[in-house]
Image (cartoon, rainbow, N blue to C red; front, side, top):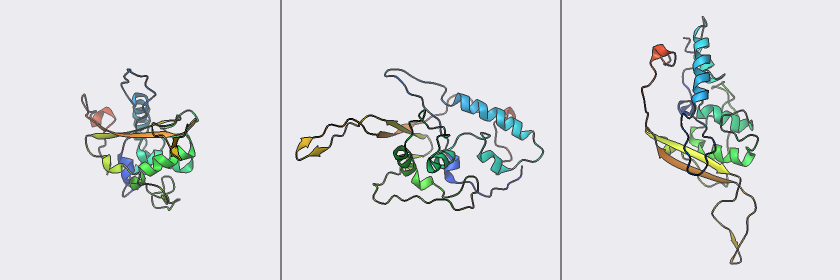
Amino acid sequence: MKADVAEVPPAANVLVVRVPAIAAGQQVSELGKAEYGTVATNRARWEQKGTRARSELLGDKRDLPTLWGEQQNWLSGGLSGLLRLRGETTAALQAVLLGSTRNYHLHNRGIDLGGVGRPLSLEAMPPLDITHWLLRGQAVLICWSSTPGPARLMRNGRLLDASEGLTVYRVRLPLAYEGVPPRPEAGLGVEGVP
């Protein structure tokens, strides 16, 4: 493998999995199964190439979905990322998601890791970053709702009714790997990756 990328941004080491809407009292399992299957197929196809570059793993679904890829979509205002709601993703939500992961954001253009992209400004925003929660054995769940949140505003001592809004919930969860991790010879390993 050609090590054409000396370093990768920290966000490229944070996996992202979309959690679908879950009804009250229900459970969901095998999160990311479809994406992981696509990655396994694409990576196996890529590994058959004579010349391969590490930078090729950063795009085109040859590597697992990462926070870095999502940040690229949020910054460009695109809806092609994994964390989207059938066209309901708004600029406000993208700003909150970027603000929540600001300390892991690299100001670059796409896979040109040396290029300078559009910087983020958090002027007049409260400190939103929760990347310090991303420790071994923990996950961060970021969910949102297009209904007003539980906090109510007051004006002149009277509660205001809210008919619309955006509520973002950010929760830290314990994370444990279950089962047997895939072996490198199974096509999902990282042997030879710097």
